[in-house]
Length: 320
Image 1 (tube, rainbow, N blue to C red):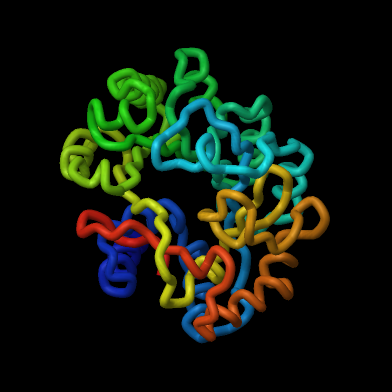
Image 2 (image 1 turned 180 degrees about the vertical axis):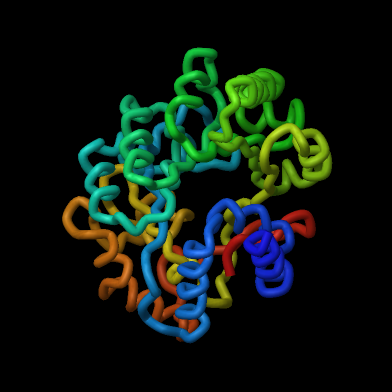
C-alpha cells in the first residue's frame, strides 16, 4: 500500500503525469527499485555527468518483424542490417550485470521471432531478473501460449492500435483475431492459477489513432492487467535535457552496440559495444558523460536535436 501511494504521488505531484502511475508500478515494484530510480533522478536534477547506477536494459533480440505497421520504421525506413542477438551476448549481459532489476527483451522488431527466445527468457529469470517483452501478438498459437505461460516471463505487452478496423489498417493484422488470442492467453493463465505473465495492451497515439483513445481504454479496461497509451516519436526541436541519459536504462541493439535511447532506430547514437566492455562501464563512460554535459548546456546533438513526441491531450509525453 505504501509503494502504491508513492507511485501515485510521484506520477501526479512530481511528474504531473497521472497516466504513468501504472508504468511506475511495473518498473519499480519494490522499495529498493524505487530508491535506485530516485537516486538516478537526483543525479539528473543536480546536473551530474554520472548517473547513480544502471538498473535495467532493453535487449533487442531482433530487429526483424513480420508486420509493416504504418508508423513503425522497421520494415519501412530502417536501413541498418537485420539480425538476431547472439545467445552468448545475451547471457554475457545477464551475467555481467547482476544488479539489473528487469530486462525488456525488445527494442525494435518482434522478439518471439528469435529462435532461442524461450531459452533466453529462462536464463535470465533463473538468475532473478524479471523479463518483459512487447509483442505484436501474431504468434499466439495454442502451443506458443502454453510455452509463454511456462517461460517465467514477468510481463507481456501487446501492441494494439485503436479498436477494430483502424488497428487492422495500421498493422495489417486482423484486430478480432488478435483480441481473441490475447484473451485466450489470459484465460489459460487464470485457469492454471498463475500470476504471470501479466498481460498489458499498449496503443501508439498519433494522427490516425488519436480519435480512438477513449474507445481503446473502454474496450480493454478490465480485460487485461494494464492498458496504456504512448505518443509516437516525431521530429521536432528538443528544448530540455532528456531524462533518458540518467534514468538507468541501457539500450543494446541485436549486434551488441549500445545506443543512448530507444528512439534510435538506425543505431546513429552509439556509445559502446556490450560485446567488448561491461554495460556499467559504458553507462557512465566518457561518451555518456559528454552527452549529459551537452544536454545540460542545451547543446542537443545528433538524433537528440530533432527528438520530440506527438502532442495530444489524451496522453502524457514520456520523455522530458
